Length: 449
Image 1 (cartoon, rainbow, N blue to C red):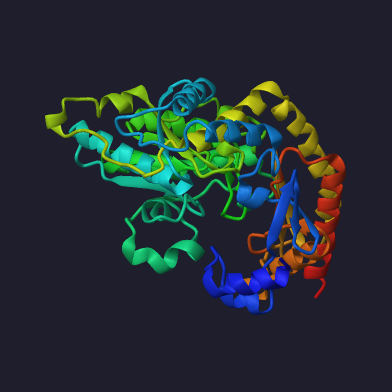
Image 2: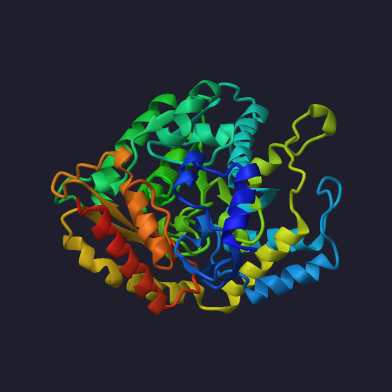
């Protein structure tokens, strides 16, 4: 096998995600032969440091021996079984352990296949809960501007990134959208905490005026990842939890990207000391190995569906591979690593290294901001540093950084003009230096003209 032969075969049959396929007339695909730790290797023995954890999923490196072994053991026992009317030990153990490590009010686990599906489950659960409780006026949801929650129709509606959403607007339910607390937009001299408090006034106003028709608020805690890695202060979550309680509205926390250590704590909502009504998990849940997601709920929500069959209150939602034993086993191995190793503590060292390695860009004339929350660091390229005027998106300056990085052993996948790092936690300080060096070079090239 060679890169060329596989590229030719691929382009005859595969439609790639989030891609304008015509780009591949000039931007070759890269077939990957193997992975090891933070490294990917193609069929010409070229290596690429996976600085984005293969779309934010791979937290403990490619071909992690501990996760590999757990999956191999399970493969010899049970590959899959229907989870309706049946069960199996990996799903039971995983649910028990997730209930133990997530915020205290979360007591029930509903398994699905991927992050979008977990969001769909949460939206339907919230609506159906109020329906079962006789509050039929509650039919709407509140989101934040610039938010992202997935790409199935319900999850897509719950987000607010125009690039993904606008085309499908006629198909989507209408959300109540509140301005984001995104601290990139704060005024000079205003702290991130102050800005987040100020922006919460918009949310409170909506809840005060429309709570009788609102099922839930859905939010990405601390980082709006697909929305250019924009960040805000935990105080917003604290205020939101209190307001949702006051106005009898559910709080759905989408920890799909932010969970499992990305923000510096195991779950981002820990930094606000809150417990949501519904929490969505996926991505790092299986260490990036297999598709699996879970929506955790409070027991109060669960009990609203628990009734005699003829009352028709059951939650009739399913996925064929719900609670797949192989996926659950990968997730259990992932939780073992968190439990047995000093991941969160070690990540603080790695996060500091990411900060110091990119600090030189703080004075760059075309870098408006370097922002960081835990193991997520983002660098925003702009046309004008003083006014934060953005480069026209048509110039695709982030693509220039991407191409330079590939030529220099690093996989970066910028979000427009935002370069970000979200590496596996097994990355070394030397590898962070390489990642930062290549990104800095790419930014110099992309902003040079």
